[in-house]
Image 1 (spheres, rainbow, N blue to C red):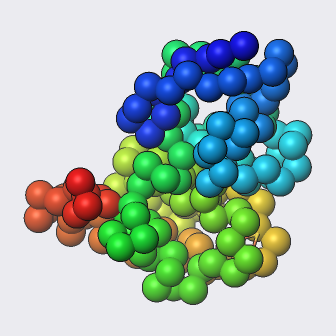
Image 2 (image 1 turned 30 degrees about the vertical axis):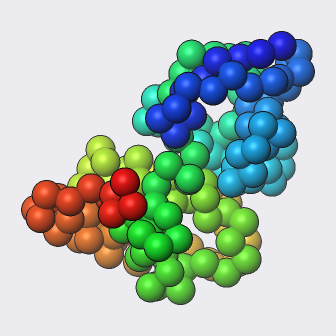
Length: 166
Ligand code: FES
C-alpha cells in the first residue's frame, strides 16, 4: 500500500507493507538516516519528530502516520552547515559510535524549540528514551546545554538553524 506523508517538508508517497512499522518503511523508501536499534519501541534510535514531537518510529505503524508531518535528522543541518545542536555534539565530542545520535539530536531539538533555557534535569528527561551505550550521557547533556546558548544567539541574530544552504 502507499501512504502519504510529509517528510522533511516535502509530501512523499511511500510504499509500506500492511502492519509495517514507520521506521522500516522510511528506511526502505530511502530515509536510512532513521536508525533501527531494538525494533520494539524501547531504545530510541528510531526517534523522528511527528508533528514536532519525538516518537519512536519503530513503535508505530506507517499507516498510523498517514498524513502526519515527519522530520528526520536530515531536516536539520547539512554537512557544510550543521544545525546548532549537531554542531554542539561535534564540538563536545558527544558522539562515539553515533548510532543513537540522530534520535538524540531530534529529541534535543524538540526540547530546545519548546524550552530554550532547559535545566540539566529537563535535558536528561528529554533524552531519557534515547539509549546510548557509549557516551555515559554526560557529553550529550553538555552539548545540549551549549546548543541552547547557540540557538539563542542564532535567534538574536535572526538566523535559521541549518539555513545557510537554503
Ligand atoms: Fe554509540 Fe550513543 S554514541 S550508542
